[in-house]
Image (cartoon, rainbow, N blue to C red):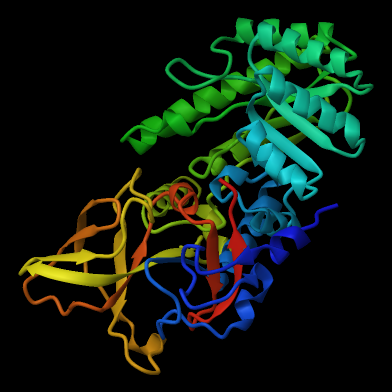
Length: 436
């Protein structure tokens, strides 16, 4: 049973990044009752916030997509590492939560999430012991992990036997590609692993085939599509081979792939898989919930071009995550320095995008927000400073507030222990905690 009460009761105070310096300790659940408003400067900047309306819109949009495709979603929890957002995704209908490490699994299990998919290899004695002991402790825990080698199959089987687990550890055969990350590179390698899993019964059970196609992106959208479809065909071929040889265990076969770039291709191709038994399509895109103002804007336009039918769901995902900062210096005519840096905001995919600005004043509201044009460009970040190229006639001056959109939400989330949720007037309504 999912129980977030420990998180809601956890304390925040002036030591918590993003919290006002004068507050005493208060529970996370009380943040929404403080009457804070970002535009009134009730909180210090830099400050990461999530817009509640965009989160709600994105959840509704994905729910429509899944209904239309017949797929399930196990959103990747590594994006946010926030059990409160995991719970929201489960309430929206997510089949499971995906994680990328056993450390992330430990966080999710602390709060009672009942079905988890480790889209990675569980290697190492401590990690394997934790998994099998958790399965033994909780008979209702439904867990799946990837395997891509006979060696790992033997290790997992031994861990199950040593723990005395009386039900099989459910594994998914992972297919990969040359130059990629994990995953069997050839059909023959994959079938050897699948047969090893079958031979390890009743300690292991092969429940499906999966992989990750996101690294097949190249500058050409057409070539990217071709490479992804070829990879998906290879996964289906492995699944058909396992089906023919009777290697799958009991239950629906799982076909799983799909980051936040090609989930339309994944669901369409998997739907056509000619398996002889029932199967479930599970996409694992994690960034849909918050979207962004950079990388995934471009990628969603490619989805619309490939699959124009998604337009019937209305406007696509919206950017929910923003990071606000002050202009702290205008040391040169065409340069401003702002109070946000690598410790606060994503920069691995692209530099932040200035979205809008505000000159603080008593009673400031969203009506006072002004757009920032494309002639204001982030040229670099230091730990605590942002270098912004500006035109000589830029209206920005010291003390002004600037909201930045981000590219690739994962690496903004991991810089904040607490992130405030805001309504469309930038009133703080609640907060989430992350566990990185």
